Amino acid sequence: MHTSLPDFDMPNEEQVHLAAESFRLLSDPTRIKILWALLQGESNVACLAELADAAPTAVSQHLAKLRLAGLVKGRREGTFVYYSAADEHVRRLLTQGLYHADHIDSGIDRHDVDHAPGLATTEQPAAG
Image 1: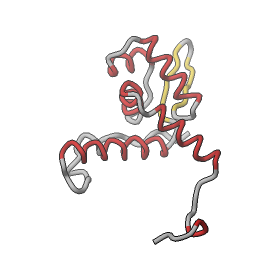
Image 2: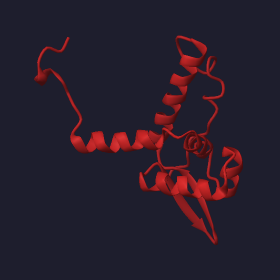
Image 3: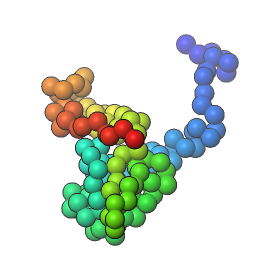
C-alpha cells in the first residue's frame, strides 16, 4: 500500500505528455485499423485505405499524424511511400488495447493464442 508521495514511482511530465499524445492518436478507429494492418507488414496508402474502408486522402492525413508522433515510419520507393509500424512499442500498445477490448467483449479472463485468435497472428515488424 502506498501511504506517502515518496512511495510512488511516477513518470516525468514529458513522458506523460508523449504517452497521452500517443493514446490520443490511438483513440481513432480508422487509425487502429491502419496500425493493425501495418503490424502485419509494409503497405501503401491505397491498400490501407481499402483495408480501413476510408478515402485515400483521409488515410494519408492519419498516416501523417501517426508519423509525426513516431508511431509509423515511411519508406520512399520511386513515387510510392510504403508505411510500417515504427517499433515493437506500437505492437505492444495496440495488441494490449485489442486484448483488453476482447476481454470486455467476451468476458474471457485471460488472453492467449487460444482465446484471441485474431490478435495472435500478426508478423513481427521488419527490423530497421
